[in-house]
Image (tube, rainbow, N blue to C red; front, side, top):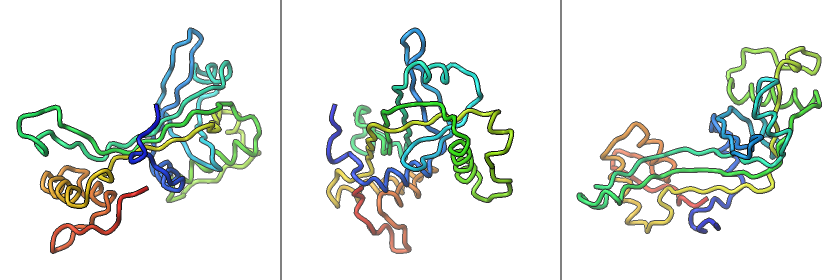
Length: 210
């Protein structure tokens, strides 16, 4: 099914920016009985491929070795929009603002020590940006104690819903309702939607087009 054009992320840089910020993705592989197995994983997007670290044995490694075709998905729920935003009685009008990226590609277990080293250092830099660790080098024994799964994308599609499908006036009304509801994610959601909270109220700074 084709993504609706107005919901598709067209900027590769925005997709990369999203993947760099998110901490959990889900790898989908096929088990020996033909069932999909979906596992949440830490990951890093590096050099246009996905890297994940794993124990050296496990079902997902067996799956990838048996069948290289895998999927990978990352999503973030930005804001739940309660139904009463639209109608006080019709619960079916509840909605969600979100960002997601879906990858289909080739999975493999990395054997090259330099590539494993690069992947592990990329993971460390992402998850521990404050440093305070010794960088991995190809000579370290730790390389033999972990496995690195690599996904090379055949396709990578991003989808987002942050109000870009609304007219400016409707978008402002939605933003005001989000601000009034004041969820724990409201301020960050409004920023992503292109709004700034000022003393005078909400101001639209950027068009939310990716």
